[in-house]
Image (cartoon, rainbow, N blue to C red; front, side, top):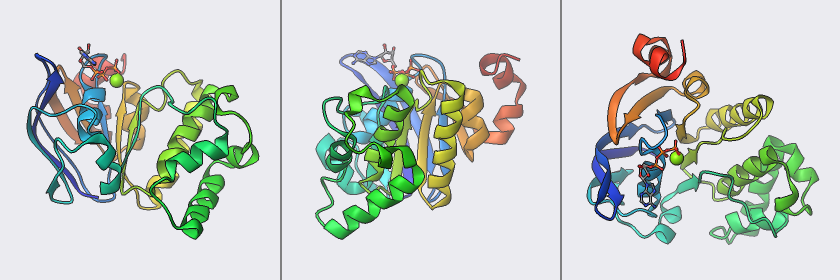
Length: 235
Ligand SMILES: Nc1ncnc2c1ncn2[C@@H]1O[C@H](COP(=O)(O)OP(=O)(O)OP(=O)(O)O)[C@@H](O)[C@H]1O
Ligand SMILES: [Mg+2]
């Protein structure tokens, strides 16, 4: 998917958070938005997925403006959102969680195809189909949340802090899985506080500060930028 965000404004009640964001994710690209606590990263993804209503600007998904579209209509446009904090249904099994993700896919064969692709990507999920999601480890739950989003066969995958609260080894696993998803042709928009990891994996990145884009460019260039290194990489 090609995503073009133009002068996007959004907030909560009278509090403005996003102050005119311009951002592009080209077809097949892997883009990261990094920034400190409270910069507005989650609000940006929520505005795209319709859980926060923009107060201005445009969100063009393959040229169609979806700004203000109701949240339940957004998945049909091909956009999947893995929200902050591993939101799986704890009382449902792994298999049931995946079924929930596939609700838009009525074709049984296609659904099975998605399941098999996901088990190839995350073998552990395939081995734990009957386990209650709430009893899985943090890393397994994050993988399940991602897998559930993939069941939609999205054309744009959005992830909010997939590394949050995970051990370094699990973070590595998570990002390797994302690399493979991306190599299969997915367009990815990632939001991260873990700036070093995000810049190592993404093609391009935007730095969000107080609701505005402070800097943008190829991820490798930003990782070498002195200002970024001081402010976000602790060097
Ligand atoms: N539901 C809400 N009602 C009011 N203000 C909110 C709400 N959600 C977020 N905010 C405020 O909006 C600002 C941006 O929050 P947001 O969650 O988008 O930041 P973030 O960059 O995702 O931060 P973090 O890295 O901590 O997840 C913050 O000042 C926050 O307090
Ligand atoms: Mg956030």
